[in-house]
Image (tube, rainbow, N blue to C red):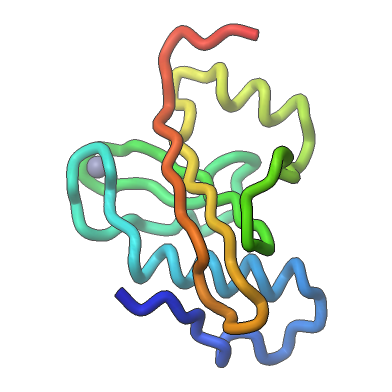
Length: 123
Ligand SMILES: [Zn+2]
């Protein structure tokens, strides 16, 4: 597996967070598979949904990618609006999560963790 990002996609972006999003989403779309049913490619949602980046065309599981500059995941994951996240993880079609850390020194993936969704999760 090639862990390097395709840096040609970063051209035209100046924001570090936008660059990271473009590079990590591209890497995931080329290298991920569905951990639920084993389908060897996930599809990317066309529009940015509040909490969902990829879906499986076979089993319809949804996935959100959270990426962070490494080397470790640390104790916090930065996310968008709290309310939309809570609604989303409590919804019937709640997503699975990919947590990816990357290294800027090599612009490559350092670690990838999958957190499967759970049913009946109430806060
Ligand atoms: Zn699937």
